[in-house]
Length: 269
Image (cartoon, rainbow, N blue to C red):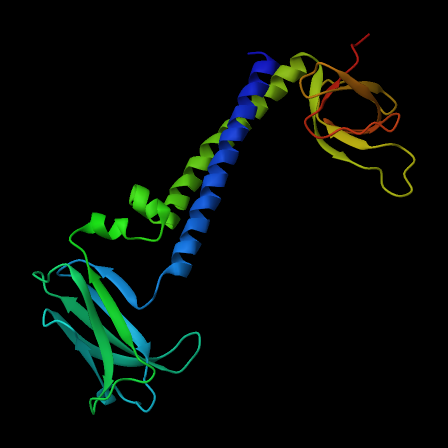
C-alpha cells in the first residue's frame, strides 16, 4: 500500500479518535451539569425500593433518640439507624433507611425530620420521594441527556467511549509503523520533532527524523524537506548529528517546518 493511502487512513483514524474524545468530554460535562442541578433532597424511586437518608443533626439534638422521622404516606416505613461524624465538614449526622411499599402509588411523598417533642427540625429537613412506575420513567426524569437518551449514566458512557478510543489509537500506531516502512522504501522519513534554534546556536530550526538502518547520512549531508504529502519542496536541511538511526538536522534559509513533514534522503552514489 502506498504512503499516500496509508497517510490518509492515519488521518481518518486521528479524526475518529478526536471525535470520540470530544464525546467523552461532552459526557463528562453532561454528568457535571446534571449533578450540579440535582437537588440532594429529591430522590427518584420505584415501589418496593429502599433508600438511605442522611442529614446533619438538627439544632438542639445530640442523640438519635432526640429526633424522629415522619412520612406523608403510611406506605413508607422509616428506621433511624445511627449517628456518625461528617467526613468533609465534620459535625454529627444521622442516617436512616426509608422503605417503600410495593403497592405505593406513583406520586410525590415527603419525609421530614422532627424533634422528639414534635417540633419541626430547624433548619427544616424535608426529603421529597418521587415514586415512578418503572425504570424508564426515572431515566426520562433525569437531568442528564445521556441518561434520558441512552439509559446510561454520563460517567458510564464516558468509560465505554474511553475503551472505544483505544481502537483509533491502536490503528494510528499500526499505520505509523507501516508508513515508516513505506517511506524507507522511497528513501524518505517523517520528521517527529521540530524545535526552534536555542540561544547561542547559529543554525536554523532543528528537525529530528529516523530514516532507519543503512541511511548513509553523516554530519554535513544535505537532505530535502517536503510537505506532509511529499508533493512540495519546503527547503533543505543539513545533518548536524547522527545517533544510530536518529538524525538531527538544521534547516537552511530560516525555513520553519512542523512535525509530520517529510525528509527525502539523497540517492546513494
